[in-house]
Image 1 (cartoon, rainbow, N blue to C red):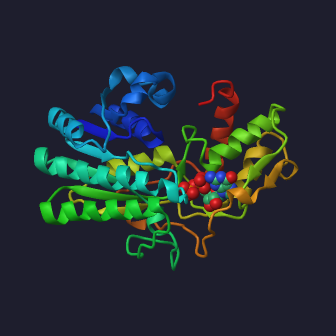
Image 2 (image 1 turned 120 degrees about the vertical axis):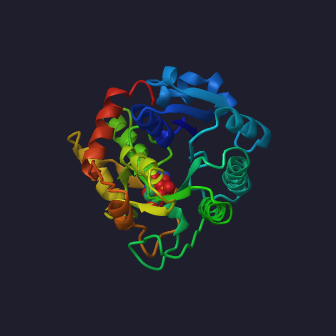
Amino acid sequence: MKALITGISGQDGSYLAELLLKEGYEVHGIVMRSELEDQEHSLRRLSGILDKIHLHPASIEAFPSMFEIVQKVKPDECYHLAASSFVSYSFDDEFAIFNSNVTGTHYVLSILKQTAPECKFYFAASSELFGRADSYPQNENTPFHPRSAYGITKATGFYLTCNYRDNYGLFACNGILYNHESVRRGYEFVTKKIIRGAVQVKKGELQELLLGNLDAQRDWGYAPDYVRAMWLMLQQDKPDDYVVATGKLHSVRELCDIAFSSMGLNYLDYVKVDPKFFRPAETVPLVGDSSKAQNALKWRIEKTFQEMIEEMVEFELANYETKI
Ligand code: GDP
């Protein structure tokens, strides 16, 4: 079996590649040309498997190069994870996000339809689809109400995926994944920011960690658990859409507490609130009901929030010098 992963160098792409290798797949990935020139940093998450995977340089916004790669690889499964993934509320970023997330997704789907119609397709949708939700927990039937350019692009990708499934018979699935973290998370996300900050405090290199709303809550899962759900979706008899979430809410404050106290520190002595990091608040929390995935895919969560944060702290302490 051959799998093609767009966004293979990211957190999810790298864990998924490892899982697929274990399952005996030939794994191909699409990376940006600039990433190949700066492997040590850009491909650091793939360092353990670089000699086992096939990387192809291309931009998902460039139709001809994407077409050529899909035609050459002829994948059995395609996991489309590449996207501008950080939720920005900045107007300046909107056009770039639309280009990569909407046009890129449309290109991949149309290329599969033309060159590999039997290929199963996974789209990385997101809890940001629900945005300003009216009710919680959200499930596959909850109306979408995205409130950022990122959320809108993910909603569009979701509908594109449904359309290629319904109109062209592609085996195409949407995974509506809630936040999922790991040692490979980028520093712009609050989990990694807090853990890095706590470790810097511990090392005596930081006196104050500036954060936004400490009472903001998220449904935070563990990335390796979530990539297993992606793979399971494509192993079913029929394509479908699934919410993947823990169903549990934790606050930024709790996250600080676990991270600092695991190193014998009190977060209240170091964490300060800076309105610069505030986001538009949710009136209804984003928390997912993954009953469908649990029943149909037999998907289970293997690591708790606390275990995940402690693992991230341990990793950060061990790799502090080499900013991972
Ligand atoms: P998101 O769900 O994609 O926005 O993931 P993030 O990890 O960026 O943010 C998770 C939550 O943490 C959001 O509700 C933010 O409002 C909250 N938060 C509080 N302080 C900060 C901060 O300093 N940086 C970030 N990124 N988020 C923060």
